[in-house]
Image (cartoon, helix red, strand yellow):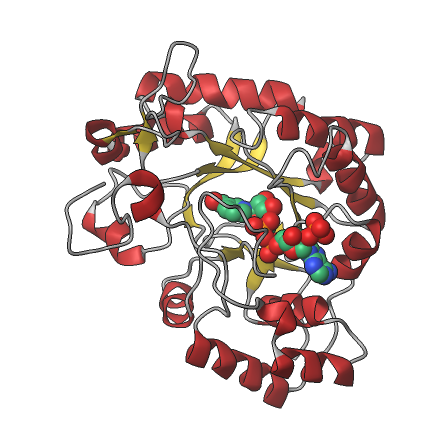
Length: 325
Ligand SMILES: NC(=O)c1ccc[n+]([C@@H]2O[C@H](COP(=O)([O-])OP(=O)(O)OC[C@H]3O[C@@H](n4cnc5c(N)ncnc54)[C@H](OP(=O)(O)O)[C@@H]3O)[C@@H](O)[C@H]2O)c1
């Protein structure tokens, strides 16, 4: 099986490069200012054209570094596929365009290619759109506004009409929840979720395209990490198969994901790994593809990072039995 260079998005003529670069920096002390710019610039020079950012990543400073790298690269805008996300403190319909303008200013762009509702719930904001927090530092969820996400979505649709973004996306892991709270309109829609195996098949049947985050197990974040035990890069079967192809476990995981028709956006600031993560379009046998697929079926997604919403937000966002946001 040979992984593709790009996929068409949500039954449109828009194509998303299958290989991208993530920019979520788990710890600013470890990744000092300038490191995102350096990584993005290196990736762009290697040929990567797909960059995943978010306003929430250090309140726009990651976006600013992405923008600086794009400018310095000299690559024309049309060649790039740039993603960013609506922050939880901007879910009021009148705030959506404000957050988008802030992101575009940070990125120094006129439009992005994909705009995500970063999470399917809103935070109560302080003056100046800061996050209201409890005494133990957890964000305060605005439940009525979270449930009114259809109005947030409608405001995001206007961003397509005004050409601030080419597509808008929900960033939800649970397709049934997405259906439960029906969206007001289906135009310009695609989806971006953590694909579980069954969900991937279901979604591809519906003609959606998936983007894959945290394929390598995700950077560990003390507040929200749910990863137990070793991640996919330490898995003995993955290590064994990767050796056959003279590739690293990370390269095999990324190649396999792309073979499943899913774009990847691994994050690293390590120059060697940036190059490694881009060199992932190699042929794997159907047998090895199936072994990897079955591995995921047996063990879930091999210990990827999950947002522990009950611990962090006070409710289980992914539980269908309860009526929370
Ligand atoms: N839409 C959303 O809600 C959402 C949520 C989470 C993430 N994302 C996006 O998805 C991107 C990826 O997710 P993620 O950063 O959580 O997880 P990830 O890419 O699966 O994992 C990142 C971790 O893997 C390490 N790594 C990267 N390449 C490697 C390699 N070749 N070999 C060994 N280790 C390697 C990195 O360490 P070093 O940096 O030290 O190399 C880092 O600790 C994010 O950066 C972000 O852009 C989106």
